[in-house]
Image (cartoon, each protein chain N blue to C red):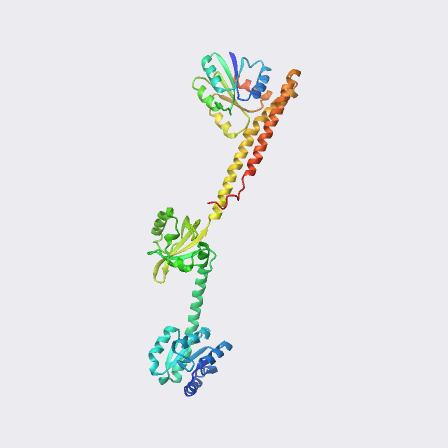
Length: 128
Length: 341
């Protein structure tokens, strides 16, 4: 199955760091970055296909559309079978982790900065 | 005449030597006298009573050259040290003798029918009865002191008229009203208007007598207009024939202010903790990510310059946030707002 990777984060440097790490692993293909969840949502909605596996690395705290709002939107059309969301947060707030567990789409929760082993974990969780 | 073995010190205040000798004779017959003192007028009596506190009983003639009647009885009482006073009088003064009992005399004896038996019985009876009365008065005083000198404000009010019937020193000091002012007021006058429904329901509750009731926290108003929060306890009893309620008050205004201040501080500290975990962590995570990539050697020479700039920006952002945390935690002084209501 074809893989598409989305990075959604309002912090440009954070996007750059995630992007550099992802590019080292061939598994993550077609990497696209978004500073605003609204754009990511529109693009995803338009091109969404069950034939493609989507990996979404999603920041929680964003000013225009929070990670939670983004999740609420995509759960109407995205299936957890071909869509894996990985929450990325600068904090390790227990409440956030508990909240994330309630979404079927969310396959993992990581605190910034991402490390190589996090990416391997993502890969494992996605192919499952 | 044979009597018990107990003997008493007797003071006779009598200006008529004939009468004195007569009484002395009767007393000798009774054999209950340890020592007999004789005063011929008020001033002498005063002198003997002040110099000698072992007098057990006073026999007082009602008309002395320097004082008589009511002023005489009252005058002797000032120096009698709570010892019984037996009035000696003739027939013409019999009516007044009865009145003297109301003034605090223990007994009266008519000289015309006096004899040793009557005198003996009266002395013993009045000394013994007086001991009981003195004990009773002391006990009443003790209970009254418990009320008046209680460190917590207390008062008694009439359950029907709601008038204050008695207030203690702590209540006077705490609320600012004088004793007289309190006694001219009713309890609604120290209540905040908003608390009136609580008062009505509390009065219904206290109808079941002799139960110690806790009424929780209510608002009272001092004479100077200050609002205070107080915890109130009550018990019902009868006071001088009236259905009454005794109230014990504990001012918790300051305690509440402390709690409020501590809660406020707690909120601010929680806010600071939240800031630590969320805001501080953002540039820190960025710094870690940048440094990780640099140390892994994954960054080309041309990009390194940009990376150093990013690191510097993130470090400065972090610095600003930490400064903010410091000033926020210093902003709040727990005791600053104590005087505000």
